[in-house]
Amino acid sequence: MPEGSADGFEAMRAAILPMFRWELSSPEDRSRFTAMVHSTFFDGLSIGGSEAMRSTIVRDNAVVASAGLDDVVVQAYVGADYRCRIEGQIRLIRAGDVLVYDLTRPLAIEAETVSNLSLIIPRGRIRPLVRTLDHAHGLVIRRESRIGRIVFNHLVELKMRAPAFAAETAAEAAAVTTALAGACIGPAPEAQTEIRHALRCGLRSLILARIEQELGNPDLNVDALTQAFGLSRASLYRLFEPLGGVSNYITQRRLARMATLLARTGSENKRILVLANRYGFTNYSAFSRLFRQTFGVAPRDFRASRRKAQEPDGDGHHDLGLSMAAVNDWLRTRAVSESFR
Image (cartoon, rainbow, N blue to C red):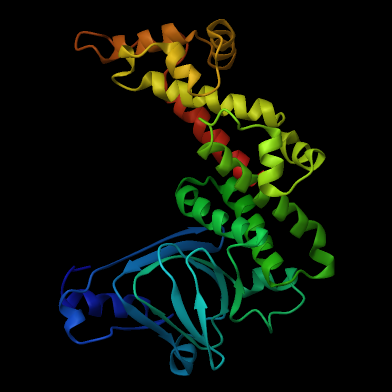
């Protein structure tokens, strides 16, 4: 799409017209209009988003009638607040809040900066999971609520992971995602089991994201997580049973982070124990033993193999039982399976 031009704006308008009519605040904005739209389809659902300058995005009765879409959208704005005109009311939606709307009904969104994540679910997929869709249009789940945090985090993860989904993973992710949307709208009695499973997956994913952020925090432990998420120790333990336990999971993620650091060019000038201390490993012998158990090679030898592979005359085959491709595959496999198990 042409950028910074009226042609770019017209191309955008035409592309999204089945869903919205895109409007700008002033004619001058057309000449400097820039935007980016992306989407990924997985098992009948779509996760995507858009980024653009100040805009008004309208879905009035004419647009609703023109395309006949009847999907349900779960949307979150990432970087800025916005206003939504819906059912005759104007609602302020903050960055991080989650908005649900029904494409069979009109609405308009006014945003100073467009930066959103949008999940589109076919009506037939979500209808069996909810009591009714009558009250879904304009539903706002605030970012302070647990379900709001779970769904927002889930949308962010979907955007990152969906392009790499295999068919089996896509089907499982779609089921969990649809059930989470059902939890927001109001689950049907017969869908309670499926909804509870989705909420457990979503909550665990939220906790996993916190763990990734806090790997370098020496106070990251079971007590810190129970306090942060308002869980009992027993509830937290149950969530992490499929992952081998909370403490074990934290240790494995710290080891994985260490493997990444040791593989990085420039790490040869830093003592391994100094790096390990950043992630709670204060005893080198214990750390080395855990690293070898996990990756099949001692940390010193692992770093040496990376250095040798990067030398101009190296043959690149000194993997000592572990190639970087294997590390990357291991990390990627764990990331996908843990998010949607």
